[in-house]
Image (cartoon, rainbow, N blue to C red; front, top):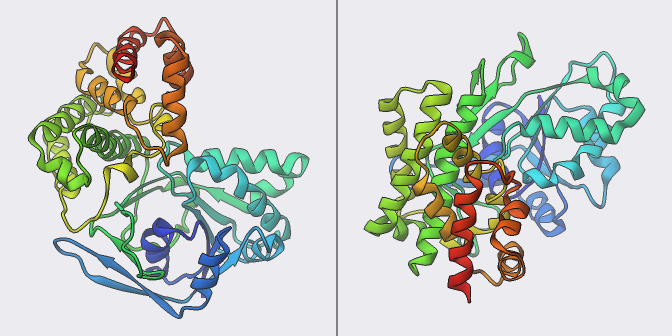
Amino acid sequence: MAKAVHFGAGNIGRGFVGLLLHEGGYEVVFSDVATALVDAINAADEYTVHEVGEGGRDRVVTGFRAIDSAADPDGVAAEVATADVVTTAVGPTVLRFIAPHIVAGLALREPDAAPLQVMACENAIGATDTLRAHMQEAAGEAWDALAGRAVFANTAVDRIVPGQPEGQGIDVTVEPFYEWAIERHPFGDAPPSIPGAHFVDDLAPYIERKLFTVNTGHATAAYLGARAGLEKISDALADETVAAGVARALEETSGILVAKHGFDPAELAEYRATILDRFRNPALPDTVRRVGRQPLRKLSRHERFVGPAAEAVERGLPVDGLLAAMGAALVFDDPEDEQSVELRRLLTELDPNAFTAHVTELEPEHPLFARLAAVVAEAQSAQR
């Protein structure tokens, strides 16, 4: 049986990537640092992915095990050495910590074995390229000898996996919709077997369509919803004012997608409608607080707000809806989220220009800079 090592045994790992790998015929070895989760996975023979909402069904996953990468790094390396596929769902900032494990596995891999197929499934553009760079850094001078033992393909992944109900163990609740787009060319004539995934020649349009619609829309609903005092994402989309704000921001991101990638406007309008229907799914117990976490990351230069807004302004396209969403993000207040606490501290300590430069990394001469700094000044006035 083919084997996949998946880094990140959390809800996305089990409820999306691991599920599709299982359905592709792979034995799935989850690697994680959460000892209790690893133990729970190893104590189970199966788990169920519950798709909630229209068209959803239960999918049972078998043929898996887990390994604690903190307690047993040698064991992880040994698994990677004999794997066919390595995937990740750990968050972009964690890729540098798992890179040494994959490098160690490549060093143990038989030189004449088929190349390890590596795909980082993260909410970031070029995440697999980022992982490869971290691996190269970790390998140092040994990289030249190891590089040929793996191939690397960027991916675009999309499935809403909300905060989970209490007491369901390692089962996962997800929405029925999913998308997994993968670069075709790195695999030559031997692509991985992943039913439901689709292989494309140019991934960039799919990544940006997803990031600038799903991620931008989800975060906009969270921040506008939080400011309106609403609890769930579905509640936020049921509020006319919030829904109008989300729709406005996504019309603006669609404008940049049309201008940059040549998407058909009518097809994008249909895609936006599908996304908004997904957010309205009342069976998904997703909260504005969970989706709004890590506002500093979401406000960074190449993320879901500043990224499309900067490109839109450069082309003379409207960005008022995106600026309104960023204004709501700036007043997001979750005392249990470190980035939210840090955001409020920075708003207190820095002037608008310094804050904008520090958080967004926009250059002061960029045409978005002054407009965003004005939004920052408003948020500071509201905080006082």
